[in-house]
Length: 236
Length: 317
Image (cartoon, rainbow over all chains, first blue to last red; front, side, top):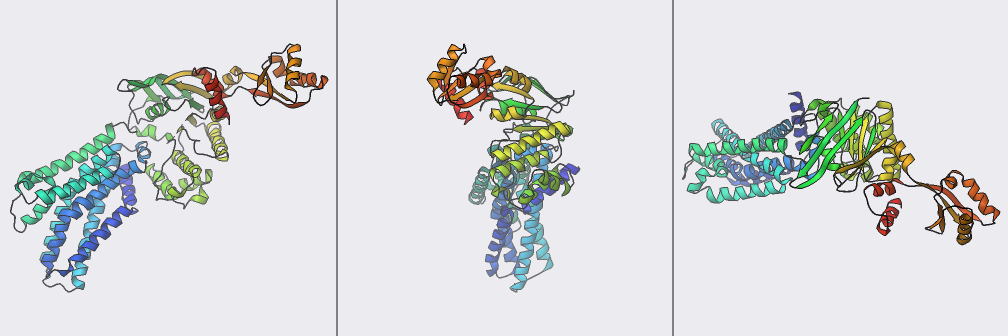
């Protein structure tokens, strides 16, 4: 357990020192600032939550996952990790856990920022029930995105870098935006987070149980695939 | 003496292409084993198998008598490893890179890091980012990462490639000291053959995946050819004098004469006197030993000839 915790704390540190993390967060905060013109707290949070359900989630979380796994290939430091007395599976778990940690931190910081911004500009219609509702919603959407990010880790390992998974994340965003509002969206895992948000409002194409199962299966396949890839593949 | 590294008929093939072909090596504790081969000979593939990064197609690898399999933390703790061009996290400083490695190895930070930087003279660069280091210092950082946990066996893949002459001497002396004083076993691959001959206690020559020959440094000393090289202002006259005196003599590059005769090699003063007696001024007299490159090329079967000489000249200069 201790090697895993050490590897996890080091991955957290490596991300903390990376431009990708803070650049992504700065971008998220900047975009939230642009939504200030909303008439009340509900629509302000609704906009923020939708951004998390689409661009922030698919691209922001995707970027972080792709970077965390792909940088070891780009910086050619993977071999250093593979000769350590820590199993390859634990290294993959540590990396994924660090991604989860920082995505959670990003969500909380940006939510707190939205609150501060709302109060500072005197948005009308505040209630704790609204805050609680949207915080909970954003965390659920974030969890769905974390599951959807797992295949990007596998792609980073297969392609030995971060460009292919980032490209894939862009593609999924396009697909989610184009096909999400259609009947196909129910079965397209990448459109599920945005549709989950809409479920709380007006849903044109309601999600089915299978939609969430698909997201879970994609996440599981990505996670197990990454571990197996690192464990079994010849590392050049 | 304890056998630290042993491979038994280690074979690695990708598809139909055999990269390493039934290589059996045995390296004992405290030895410096030089693994020589041209680029593409199979050195790195063998090393990857030794490190458990690659699964042999057939054959076995043993470290400290235990069969090596992926994810054996006990064995990983005893092995240090560095690749040809060592990489580090470019935006982290030397200290940060070493801190990460030390923590992942379960060592005390910053003590282990300070000791290592001191030992490799990296302390002045402690706060330099890895991306700003010279190639030589980047190489030292790679070595520091490999040595930080004080491994029992050090596996180095072409470690002196990027070093300047002073750096090469420094690393060589350090490796020799590690082997002789701390009993660290060093497995070092290289194609810089002279370099290997100066530090290795045993040398294995690999070519096209096959281990052609293994010899000790002593073996090599006795095997390699020696000849007396003579420089003079009148080469023709000198050649005639030596021929008359019964020496085999042949002209060499740069207006020199080469005398491969054993008597001449062992008694250069006779040769000097012979020329002085005939009033031929002597400008140079030295015993030249066949270098490892020559020997190596001979072993791997490159035919003597222009290509060989060009290659050897290139390696010597």
